[in-house]
Image (cartoon, each protein chain N blue to C red):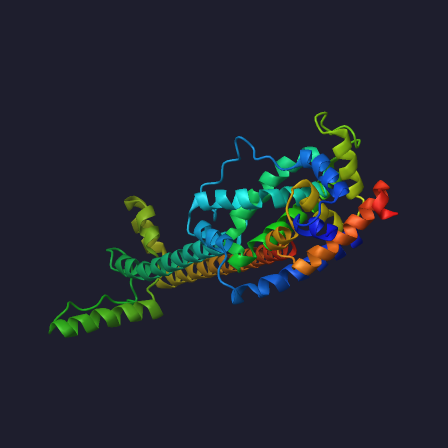
Length: 197
Length: 202
């Protein structure tokens, strides 16, 4: 996929996230927002709870973009970066969308750094423990457009429901629903499933 | 309905999706047994060598040093005048006319004495006496008389003028150096701000 296409899709997702964040003040403060404020006040355990809540989302976003072996390290990177910069977050309720954006940027940064250093063969870093069938299905999902693959990975790999995906990523439920259905349709076609015919 | 299963796992189970979930679920996130420790504070960050705060602090330090140096030079110029008057009074020196005579002994009320002292200091700062102090201290006693005889009041004034000229030259150089430093610091600050604006994640 071209970089311009990726950037365009990221921009689209950003605008949707911002719209969702703007609607946040009208609602009551979510438990996540309270946790964010607690972290800002120096409560480190609160960040641990945020980690537990959002780690699957960050994992899914990264898994949709970078090699499986790199994902765990990058998840740690993303949370470390978020912890250091949490005081720059304006809306505590927009933490999910903000974190998702950090994860997407980290994935882009991963490829930029890799290009600056050296190219490795595709199969060199593949861990033997990764199930071949799962790896193949994942590689098919990763051929889909950015927005579809991210939503599908969160749904099929991380086991999150549509409403959960919307809540965590800051996307609107309607966007998530569209991404899920269109993405699933494309995946079925690629897998040659009966329901796609 | 099968579409509901994809959306929120409710309704009739879609066998194909369930199979995909089972397969891909093996790649699901597993919490690490030992997560990476967090840094001590959320506000700690590795600062670049030339941060804006560093640039401002450096500028302030340089300005303070420059101010101190300038005050020191000015004070040296003022005290030099008084010592020159002392040289004028040394025995053996031909004195056609005293250039700056010492102030008369304080007489009168406390207020008058204070006024006299202030007036004297103002006079000295405007028209300081010739020959700075260090010339007196550096010349040994044997040579002092010979030197004093050779020197006239005009010589003393010339030395004084040279001293002042050197001081002003040094001051001008210092100001020029400060301006260059300030420009460099501004450039660095602008570059840093530019870098931060280009790469924000927030």
